[in-house]
Image (cartoon, rainbow, N blue to C red; front, side):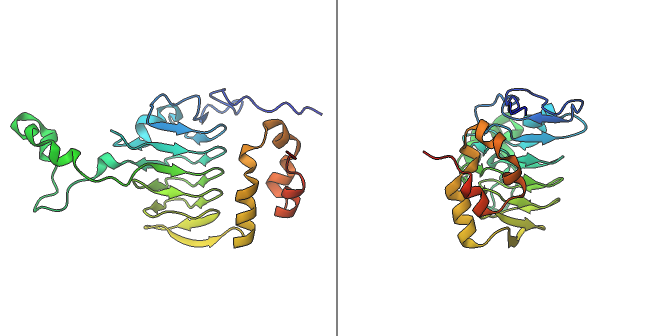
Length: 214
């Protein structure tokens, strides 16, 4: 039986499907970190992910995406650079227009941020989901199509809506703790290859039974 795992450095992992790209070999921005095998699917131009799907990314906040995440078409991450002041009469960002207004750029750069946007491992994003600045999404979460995620999402939570709300969790609290402790996404790729059927359709008990022994 062929147990050679797929190459995580190949840009287009799905033969004959240029709409699918692995993000780790694609991204070049030092402000974006992506784990192995996380992919983006887009029939138009998936290779434009950094400019079309990560918006207002002027730093210093980072976008961190874990391993084995699946991002559907149109998933967008809104970064902290999109924020406008709301503590005065106007929300308009006058200094970016240039001229003498640029002398007041500190009114924009001094805006407080929510920190990095962090996506755990094994997160599934549905079609046209949107993630707002500074959100943290837990391992194994599912983000429903069209959701606007404004708050943190717990491990193995399923959220949907605008604003996105927790619909349910995929497992019990005990099972979630066990899954996070197993951290299968950090297992050697060869070991994952040997136990794909358990990973995709097994129980938590079965996953624990095939965990690598240290």
